[in-house]
Image 1: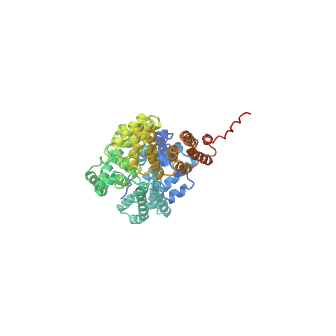
Image 2: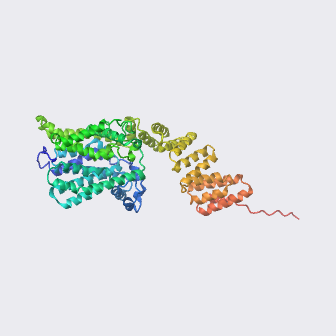
Image 3: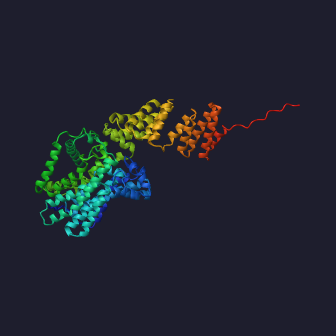
Length: 611
C-alpha cells in the first residue's frame, strides 16, 4: 500500500519556505495557548508536581527507573519533570511553557512526517493539529506533559523508521527503536505504533515489505513489556477500580464501540467540549448493544478492502486514529475511568490520523468542485481560523480552577468530580457555605467518595456545625478504613461535643494507623492529665517528640488546669510529668512556667513568742 498522493503544494516563494512554515506552526500554537502559560496548577498538576515528594528526593532518578514508588512506570516522563523541578521548583510557569513548546515541536514533526509520506495538505494537517480544541486539556494541565513528550518521541520513532525503510540505514532503525522506548517510557498510549506500521507493510506489495515486518518484532516486544508493566501498576500501585470492573468483557467491548464514535464526533465537530461529559462519568452512556462496535469493525474492514477507492491517506488515517485510541476505549481499566470514561486529552496521539483523513477527503472532494480547488490556501486558512477560534473559546474556561469547574458543572450537572473540585475551590477561598453545598451535591452523585465526605466534614466543622461534621467524619471512616485523618478529626469533633470517652477511642485508632501523628498524642495528653492517668500521658508525651510552640502551650495549659483540682499526691505525680516535659523540651518557656506553679513553696519558720 502506497500512502503517498500528489498534494496541492503551497506556492513556492522565498517568503513561504520551510523555515517560515515551521515558525508559523509555532506562532499558531502560541497564539492560542501562549496566554495560559502564566496560569497555576489545577486538577492532577499538584499531585504530579507541587505535592509530589518524589521530585525533591536526592535519589529521584533511581526511584523513577528502578522502583515502583511512583504512581505509574513512566520513568522518562518523571525524570523530565525532575529536571524541571531542579530548574524552577514548583513554579507553574516553567512547566506550562515546556508543555507548550513541546506541543509546537510536535506540530512541526507531524508536518515533517506527513511530508515524508507526501500526504495531501501536509502543512494544513499540522496546523489543524496545533490549534485543535480537543488538545486544550493537554495544554491547560502541566501534568499532561506526558502527552506532549510521548508524542514527541513517537513522532521521532516514526520519522526514523520511515527514513530507514527508504534509505536502508541501520542507524535510523536503531534510532527508531530508541525513540520508541523513550515514547513508552513517557506514556504507553504509543504502544500501538508498530501495529499501525504492520498494517502499512502488510498491504505493501513491494519486496521490502516482508523485511520491514520482521524488523518490527523488537517493537512488539517492547510494546508488550510496557503494556504489561502499565497494567501491573494500574492494578497494584494505583489500584485502578472503576465501574468498568462491574462489566463483563462483552460489555466492555460494547463500551469501546460507543466510546470510539463519541471521540470521532468530538474530533470532527469540536464543540461543547468539557473535561466531564454528561453520561460518561459512569457506564450509563455506553450503548448496551454491539451495534457501535460492529460499525467500527465495518469501518476498518472497508478501509482494508476498499482502500484504493477510498484513498490510501484516508484509509490509513482512519486506521491510525482507531489503533491509537484502542488502549483507551475501556477494554483495559485505568485509574481515570473512576472519574470519567472519556477525556479529550486521550485523543492527543490519535488526532493526526483523523486530520489526515479529513484533509485528504476534502482534497478529493475539491477535485469535483473546480472553484474550490482553485483556492486551496484560502479554504485551509478559513478552516484553521475557525478551529482556532473554537480552541481559544474553550481554553478560556481553564483560566483558573473556579472558572473551569464552574463551567464543568454548568455543562454537566452530573459531574460529581466537578462539584467536588468546585467545593475545594470554595473552601480554599474561605467560602464554607458554598463549599458545603458543592460537597453535598458531589456526595448525592457519588455517595462513596471518601474525600467528598472528609472535606465536607472539615467545612462543617469550620462553620461550627460540629454534630453534622462528626457524622461526615464517621462516613469517611467507613469508606476508607486505612486513613487516620477522619479518626483524628472526628475525635476533635467528639471533644467539642463533650464526648471524651469516644474521642479517646478515635484518637487511639488514628495512632494505630499512623503512630507518627502528633495531634492525637497531644489531644490524649489533654484528656488524660485531668483524669490523673499520668503514666499514659507521659508515654504520649515521649512519643510526640519535640513540641511546637502551639503544642507546648496546650500541654502547659493542661498541666496548670489539672493542678487546680488535683490532690496532693496527684500534684506530686503531675510535677514529675511537668519536669519530664521540660527535660524533653528545654527551650519551651510555657512548660517551665507550668512547672513553677507546681513547685512546693519553702517552709516558713514559726514565729518565736516574744519574751
